[in-house]
Image (cartoon, rainbow, N blue to C red):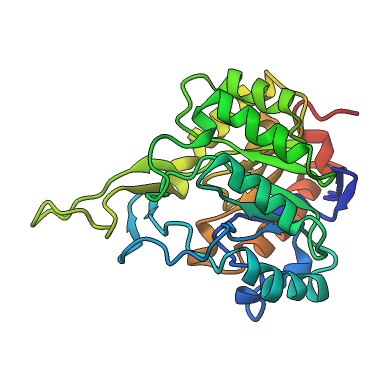
Length: 305
């Protein structure tokens, strides 16, 4: 099966990307992962100022996957420009890179786009509008506020010609409206979904297992949530969709394609198996050959001709 696909004015050599927050800025995993074998990657979310993140422990496991509350730990805009993007520009050529942006205010997103737009090393931006672990901001994520979502996406659109992805929340009670809002505001694609809020308690003490208390659920437990969101989003937009949540095996990626995702992102699986993305690429090639499928695009629901 031919895995390459044209999206956002660029060719992706395969539909497998590494999700934001699971591969740093690429350099952190480059000794273990051959990034150039992947379709792309999404960097750790960048904020205006450096962030130390939430108190430890930040990650814990359970039967259905993982609960994390990293808290957007990152070196900040200036350091990302100075130290991270030059490495990406020099070492990641075949894989497509999106830089994830996270703001505590609407204006933060505009400053981030303006600060990064002239730099090399990446294709576009993924707007992290749905992180459940940003204690500094407080309140619901921007993705659950239609007015804020529209202002952020349209404002970023006015400041860049690069592709813009809006990363949406899994617990949106009116996802169709949110999808239409992001589409109308100028997004080029939608990433579905972010982690879903959750909590794990120690049986002995009743205290939270994570230092920050609640966190975001990811891994296999998120697969049906992500599939539902992608399928619903496909009913409300013609934009390319990126499916994330519980992707490990070829069957998971194919399910996302059947739901409407043109690209998939591997997240939590990379923590257990750092080369999970590479293995998925090879697995998809075998899956297609075994079933006589000529090209990945043939199985993507709603893919524009």
